[in-house]
Length: 183
Image (cartoon, rainbow, N blue to C red; front, side):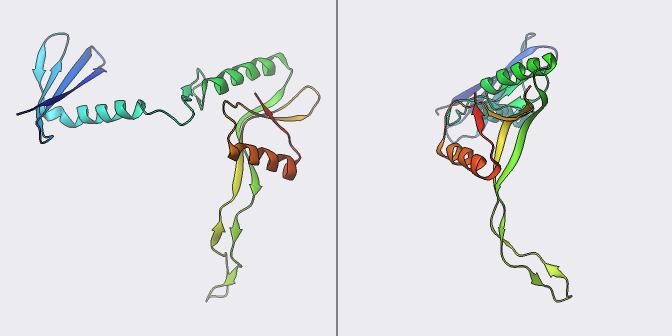
């Protein structure tokens, strides 16, 4: 009988643990061994915890399309990339120095509104909103602030300029008259 095993390493509040899950050839769990610093203990009743831990570990190893990694900053916010987080740190310094004001993150601009069918009148005589034909198109800017010349600045921390981004950048200029600054 062929057996496969899966090794998981995780931390408990007190110690580092290594779990070994042994599977049979029909992929049924044969045994679960947990290695603590004090010794080895078998815990068949903790299988679901180890399987969930393995799923979480497997999900974290998935690569993104453009190889960026979400980063959690010291301020508790989650950033889409290292570049975005470092640019936010720079902008915070500029704001503390008084060179920029009203710094905001992830600001939404509507480029094309939601397209709906014609409104109708319900049986009760109240107006009824038409159903959505096409959803709205939005551009979410990474940073928006007012510079020392009292001009609105919209910035995007870009690693890869996608076709969607280029179209949305052009729509921002056409509809809102705002040029997106790429950093």
